[in-house]
Amino acid sequence: MIKLSVHILTYNSERYIKDALDSVLKQKTNFPIEIIVGDDASIDSTFEILKSYSDKHSFIKLKQNKQNLGILKNFKETLDRCSGEYVFDLAGDDWIHNLNALQKMVDKLDQNPNLGFIDSGYDAFFQYRNQTKRFYNKKNLNASTYKDHVQTIGSPTLGCCFRRSALKKFVDFNFYIKKGFKIEDYPILADLTENSSFDFIHESLVTYRVHQASYSSNFHDFLDLKMFFAKKYGYSKDAILKITENYFETKLVYSSVHFNPKEGEIAFKNLSQKRFIYYVYYLSSQYKLAHKALKALRNFRL
Image (tube, rainbow, N blue to C red; front, side):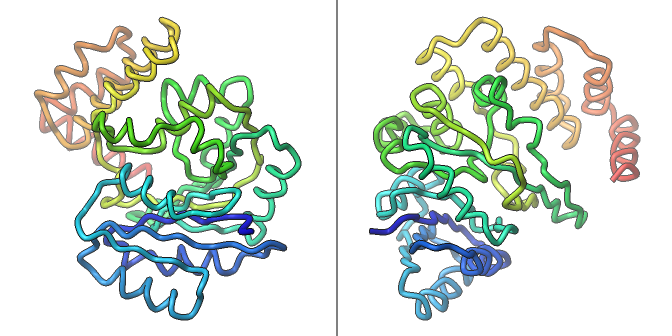
């Protein structure tokens, strides 16, 4: 029986997929793994690179979608091909930097059969400025605040290793696809933190690559998605307020960075607490001079 499936999604990942695959192949484990890849109709050389790896390693199993399915549907269809007791999710542009990462994760899950998943630390590598922030999510791996953070702010599944049976039991991917949800990480963690036990590995094991083409580098409207789960699980009024505030804060920051006066005004008006930094973001979303000044300050600090 396969102990662990490494679940990888790719889309136009030709620049990065070798780093991802090589980092998995270098892992030191005492159990067999499989690498299950779902390529979402890439139009670059991603699939050819993947094929060159699968030709050498029979445990790398590929499928290229005939048309682009989007993240959530591709995630589900790739998950359906996984046969491991556990599933480690790795994006095609990220990599594992700790050689014992997969062993550590599996050991943790083996030691406690009640765990639905474990989360671990990650570094954030900012491609556009060639800078790494170590253990980027350290403060979030806290048992007393983790669930609240997942519900209100959201958290990536980067660094998470799941019990496959928990994913199948508690996450209704088909329903979420019908609802038109686009992302997988928020629904997965919202469902699993409500319905299963979880634990942490308090060290950085993987690296998250931040670049302009990455999905998380772009602003998307996830307010309706979060409100669906707020209703589903009866989030508190404070949690709902935090979700709303986080949404409009993110919208305001995005408007500031990309100089969008209309969206900046909407976001600023809907923030219930007007912190000083919000005025700064608002002004830089409305006035070119303020926008240029804040951009210069950002570049200087980087």
